Image 1: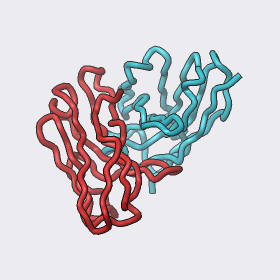
Image 2: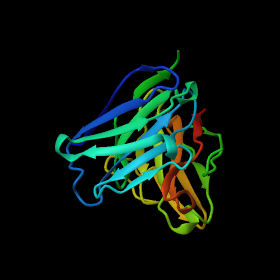
Image 3: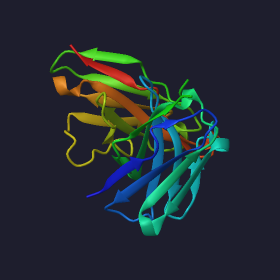
Image 4: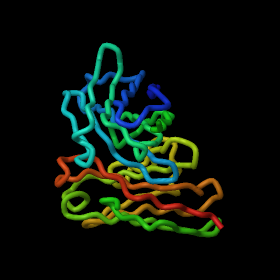
Length: 117
Length: 112
């Protein structure tokens, strides 16, 4: 059974860097074809793609946020870490990580991040 | 404004059939990238409904079906039920955006 769980701060100040960790079980990120994606959803708004890291360490970022995003994986710890720099109130959202094999087939429950001074 | 365009809302009575369109371009759906569909009940995480344009994951009822044609895709729901009321999102990838993933703006389905 595949599970994912997002963790990190619930409140960050403007200009700070956000670091979120996705801890997963039930699969290995060293298996061919597997990836872990990050998606966010501002309150009342649509899903927004952020980043995806593949088993071979290939990475894909939203070009609209690429300059602010970094995604890394630690296969031994079954974790994927997303960092987003220079946070702004418009970045307030629920952040999800998801297993990618055939589509984003298993999602974490999400973690809510508020950006406010 | 989303790269993939969906109608903001659709509605139907119980038992009816509804379709949700997802319109893209030659750099995403038209470029051959697969389209996936997700269902999101408010307050919960999205759930994969259709993958690879027309495939249902285990446990998804066959009332849900997907298709792709040219630069567009469509999700059809037959035999509408009250529990189908949710937001639906299409997703693909885009070669003009460095193969980044892209979502549609979402469609709110109301069961009358």
